[in-house]
Structures are given as structure tokens and as C-alpha cells.
Amino acid sequence: MTLSLTDAQALVDDWVQTIGVRYFSELTNTAILMEEVGEVARVMARRYGDQSNKPSDESADLGEEMADVLFVLLCLANQTGVDLESAFLAKMERRTERDRERHQSNPKLRDAAPST
Image: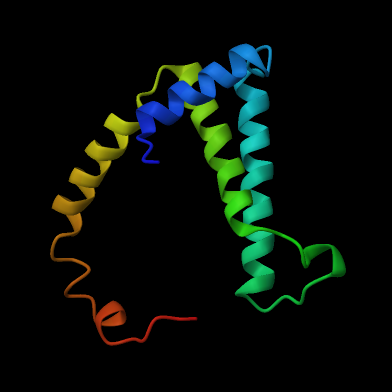
């Protein structure tokens, strides 16, 4: 199934209205977003960084944690009237224009092997 950001926003809005009862406040959702991003950071630090896993970290699912971040971000977009698909496409266009040559000419990126 293919899902656009516009479709995802509508799916989240429908879920909130029918199952979630209502949106949490924008401030609460912002705090929840930070919490969810922290959970992604925890998985990344243990899986790809220098921190060792704790037994409770073994079953962490990175995709699930990223999906939690996306869900709350979609909630905030709905609450604040942001069309994320349009905003994302516009941002990609600006990034492409701004960085068209910058990254290609950066020896730190060009000559270094990607970290794993």
C-alpha cells in the first residue's frame, strides 16, 4: 500500500476522531514528540553507537519507534493546519537549490567512507 503524507494526515485525523476521542493539546503533543524522538535516539545509541544494550533494549523495534514519531508529528500538523506533503516538497526543492553543489564539493563527504 502506498500512502502519501496527505493520506497519512487524514488517516491519523480519522483515528483521533474515532478511537482517540480528541487530540491532546499542541503543547502536550510537542512534549510527546520529544519523548518519542528520545526513544529513537536510545535505540540508535545502543544499536549503532557506543552504548551497550540493557536487557530491556533487546526487543526495541526501530521502525516502530520511528512510526511513533511520525504519528505524533502528523497529529501536530493536523492541529496546526500544516499540509506536511506540500511543506516537505517545498523544503526538498529549497534544499536541492541550496545544496546542489555544496555537498558534492565537500571533501569530508566525498572522500570519507560512510560510518556504520
